[in-house]
Amino acid sequence: MILCHQHVKKIGSLWLDDFLADNLDEFWDAVADPAVKEKVLAILCGHVHITYEEEYKGIPILGLRSTAFQFARVDEPTLVLAPPHYRYIRVQDGILTSRVYKVTI
Image 1 (cartoon, rainbow, N blue to C red):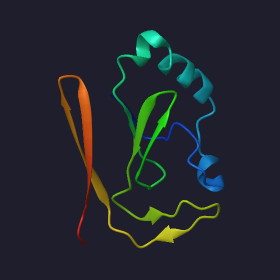
Image 2: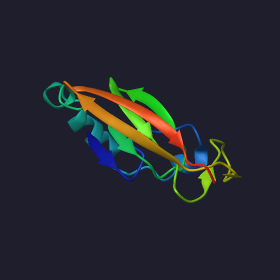
Image 3: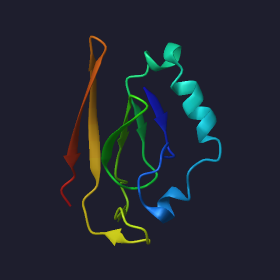
Image 4: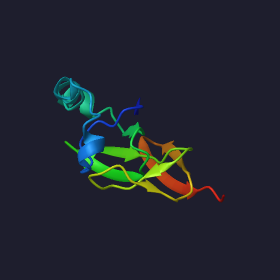
């Protein structure tokens, strides 16, 4: 697993996608290399305060809400009244499974 604070691909929100790292092409060149890719079960990241599960270049990307405030996946900064999430990750026999839990507030 690769753990990142910053999100590693566009999520479809103009203002949040402005926060992408400048060298993401280099990151993806390294991660998508066949010798590396076969060893990566998933990339876990936050930063955008949104829970999502996507795949890019054949690698699962698991984003998670913040323990603080949450954002909507829209083009302008918009806060959402939603509970924080936590993600339970299990790796068994080289297979990653994930479950998201809402924190009751």
